[in-house]
Image (cartoon, rainbow, N blue to C red; front, side, top):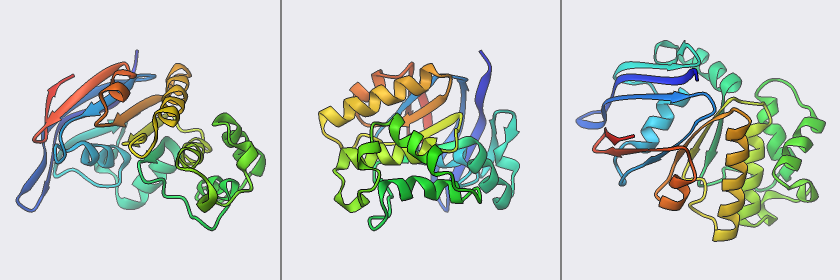
Length: 217
């Protein structure tokens, strides 16, 4: 199985604070890796570096053979558009736009808009019946499913999720986990940050961070 993500001795400092301290990690294509650890252990920092939202102080990060850590800001933005779908605990939907319009926003980043593809992404998460509802009128579970549709609409092979079930009840959590399992079975690679052991154990492997270092995994 080929490696999609390869981190080598990654260090990230913010002034005197060391967020990541020599992290090395390999993730294979189609693997769902859950990342756990206490608050402040570097979990979200790790996702942000892999997504190219931030740059490491030292070390290298390769995603699908591309060295993200060596890219300038413009190249990292293009890399995210091509490679990465991101899902967050706070759904980051625009409340005055419909579910469909929120999904289509991700397409506009590509200077394109295809309503049919956006509707297919909503269908994938069981939300076509709410396509024309404003985001502010959706439940938390519905908003997260729209956010996942938005992450999927440009067909990324890498899904990065930061506490994606943290604001959901048990039923909606189960729906999201089922979607993630389907994505992994399709060959997409998932990194999921979570505090929830049940969510973590739904993946293929658990990586634990502590004080910016990999404890196990």
